Length: 301
Ligand code: NAD
Image 1: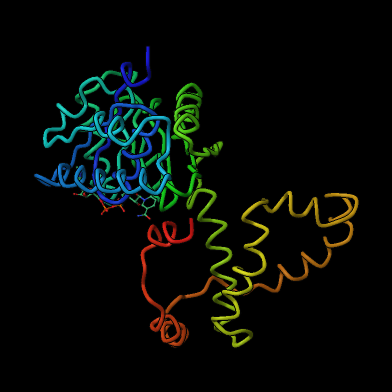
Image 2: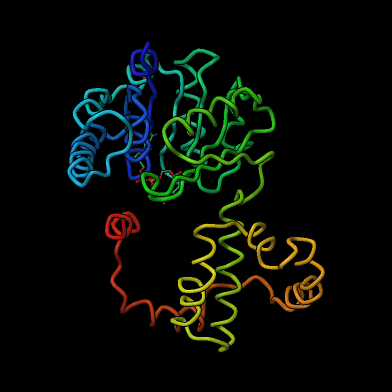
């Protein structure tokens, strides 16, 4: 039996991320049922998805094995939550980044679905243990944190609630892989998950260097876009260390351990990200065009 005949996924919240998830699940041949609590919003989302899927097909960038019309035939919009959840085996929540809103959504969803339906949140920085704390059955709950724009950036961080079953992590991992994403598993929850912890470390040191007058805004951005970023588009930090010394990681540590520790111990405190430094840095950014990230991806691919 084809995947599309077997399985439906409900996407709750049809903003930027909800629409992206819907397009990804469609590309995997799943029936996708979109719900939004703003009347008419889910059907407006479908109009937008139709446009995007058509454009992607024209540009030969549509993901999955099905044509645009085959994918769109699997998509429905609902203003009623219980209708939207009918037959779903997986629910991807994509409402505002607000703890109470997410808790209320999951309580409402739990009231309409069976115990084996997996409940997944797109949260960027709320902890699974708080989002799912009001639910009866937390063992089927997981955070699947995408990276904007998810249709182009494949990483998904899977973050468990302390009670999440391994089988739920495995099933979510398989689903994400099947629709062409690249899932990574965190073994337990931590504030910022993995991606934002690494991202914030880079942002903090870049900010300190500019704030302290060591380097200009333009040049610190070049340090990433023309330097570190070139490597990190292909390799992670551990593989980079391994390849950066003739005899691999041990050799790298022998050569650079002391220097790394000396430099790291000179890092300053967490920046305030406000005041004179923020005003100075903002002056530089203010002349740049403000194009949303998803448009960048379309331009660069
Ligand atoms: P958004 O503001 O574009 O969309 C939110 C949608 O949720 C709106 O359509 C709204 O009507 C709907 N909504 C609000 N409350 C609802 C409810 N109770 N029931 C049903 N629908 C409801 O937000 P977004 O950028 O799509 O973000 C959604 C989630 O994804 C957030 O948790 C965010 O942190 C996370 N996320 C965002 C990004 C990003 O870059 N935008 C990246 C990764 C994860």
